[in-house]
Length: 202
Image 1 (tube, rainbow, N blue to C red):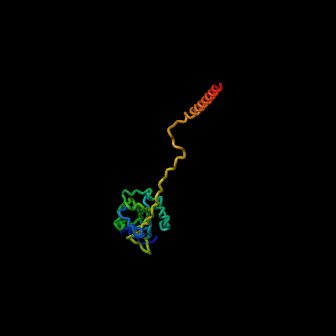
Image 2 (cartoon, one colour):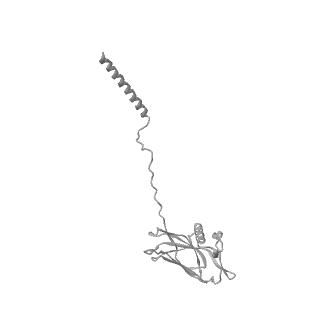
Image 3 (cartoon, helix red, strand yellow):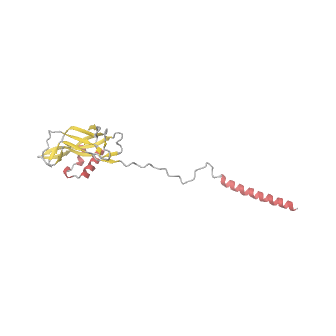
C-alpha cells in the first residue's frame, strides 16, 4: 500500500444510480445503506485496512483482490451485516445520493429498499474504499456508478392436466350386478321365446 492517507480527514461517497439505455432511467427513491467493515489506517507509513471484529474472517490483502473477488466478498458480507445502525440515504430524482463526513474505511454498500418502478433491476452489494486510491493519489470524494442488472422474470407454473378420467360419482360395485342381471334377462327371454314356439307348434 502507499502512503498519503490522513486519518484526520473525512471523505464522501456519491452513488450515481442510473442506466444508459435508449431512454436513461434514474433510480430515484431507492434507499441505500453504508456500513464500515474495515478501518483505513497508517501502519509504519503505509495504508492498511484493519477489519472490524464481525468481519475479521474476511481479512486479506485488499490490494491483491480482483473485481470479481471483491464482488464475492461483498455478497458474503451482506449476508451477515447488520445495517440497522448504518448510515442510510435515498436517491434523488437524478438517482444520486451522497454520504458525507465518512471516516477513512472500507464501506459495504447495499440497496435496502427499492422504490416502485425500480423493481425490474437489481444491484449487488458493493465494497468501496473512502478514500479511494486513483492515479497515484488518494481521492476523498468518491463517485461511483453501481452496476444494475435486469431481473429475469420467474415463469408462472402451469397446471398439468390430470391423465385420469374425471370421476362421475358412480360407484363401481353395481357394474358386475348389472352385467349378471343382463345375462339373466337374456336367458329368460330366450326361454320364453322357445316356450312360445313350442306352444304354437302344438
